[in-house]
Length: 343
Image 1 (cartoon, rainbow, N blue to C red):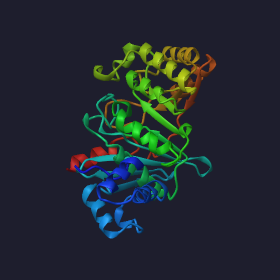
Image 2: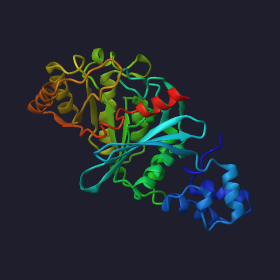
Image 3: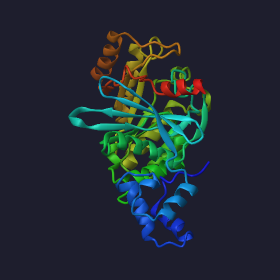
C-alpha cells in the first residue's frame, strides 16, 4: 500500500520536495493545504504546479480513504463508514453536543486485538494497525462533514490506540502542534482497555490529554469474564498506572464502566467502585450497555440509577454517559461488521 500524504511532518515534506529538486516553500504549501485548509487531495491544491500534484498522486495515497456510508440519528449523531485503500473499513463518528459543540470519535485500528466479549468492534480480532495518516483522514472527513474543527476528540472508536502507540503519538502531535491543527490537549481523550505500558508511554509525553480507562469491573474475577487474558492487566496494576498518569499530567483519570445485567451491576460492585474512585481520585463514567447480538443485556433503569446513587452516596465521583445515536447503528463496530459481511 502507498503511504498516506496526510500525517507527514513539515520536515518529511521538505525532504520529499527536495528529492524532487524543488524548494522548501512547496512543502510549506502542502502542509498549509492539509493542516490549515484541511484539503488532502492534491488535485485541489491549486497553487501547486501540475507536475507536483501529479507526483503527489503517484507517490502517495491521497486520499487514502472514502466515505462509503453515513448513518444518521435524529439527535444529530452521524456515523461515517470509511473504506480504506486496501478495502478494509473503519468508523468515525460526529457527535453533536450542547451549545453547538461537536465531538469526533476516531478509530485507531482495523478491528481490535483486545476482544472484550461484549464489544462488536473487536469480534473478529485485529486486522491491522491504522497508519497515522489514515487516522488523520478520519479527522479530516469529520471536518469536511461539519465545516469546522471539532471542540473535542475522543479516541474511543474501533481499536486499542495504546497498542498502536507510534501512530497515535504522531496523530496527537499533529492535532496539537501549532504547525498542525492547533487543538488543546485538554480537548482530546485517549481511551484504553488498560494497557499498562501504553499508559506509561502516554504519561511520558507530559501533555494534558484526558485518559479514559475501560475498567468495567472492580475486581479481577469479574474483569476476567469481560476481557480475555492476552491484553488484560490486573486491576491493581491498571490503577497504579492511572495514579502515575494523574501525577505526571495533572489530569483526573476517567474509569469507563459498561453496565451489564447480572455481571457487574450489583450493589457490592458499586460500593467497590466508590472506594476506587475515592482512593484514586478518579471519575467513574457509567455506560449502560448498548445492546447488540452478543448475548449480554442492559440492566433495568432502576438498577442503573441505584448503581449510580450508591457510588455518589459513598463518596465516589460518577457521571452517566449521555447516550447518542441510539438509532444509528450506535454500538461501535456495527457498521463495519455489516460491511465486512458483504465483502
